[in-house]
Length: 123
Image 1 (tube, one colour):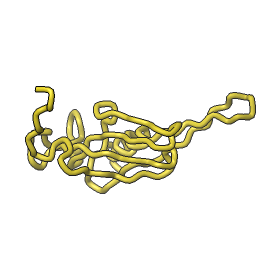
Image 2 (image 1 turned 90 degrees about the vertical axis):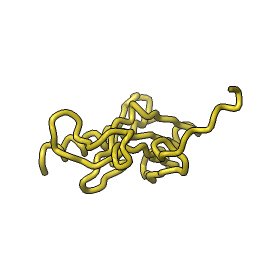
Image 3 (image 1 turned 120 degrees about the vertical axis):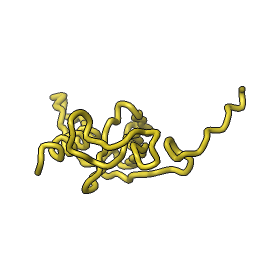
Image 4 (image 1 turned 90 degrees about the horizontal axis):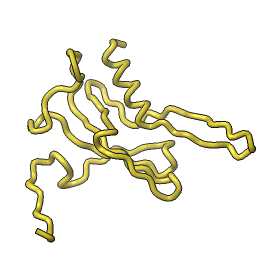
């Protein structure tokens, strides 16, 4: 496994760090790394730039992330720019079981779909 793929897997695992506190009075914290998205030749990362939301005491979690072609290069290991048709895209990953399993989503008319945003009704 090359250095770039190791960093990519590391970043993806960090996206899905699941923490649970045991209720035995010791306040022990256990952690488990879960891979949210992994695809050969693709970059998945930067959840901090895209947001994380949780509902129902953390049972439903939605994470935004950047997605694109993986390239071993100096700097970021993703090819293109967000303005390019085949460049950096935005995706969502959703868990409904507290982060144990994940589904990657590409909602219609989501960021980067090339559709002009509608003006706000307040404008």
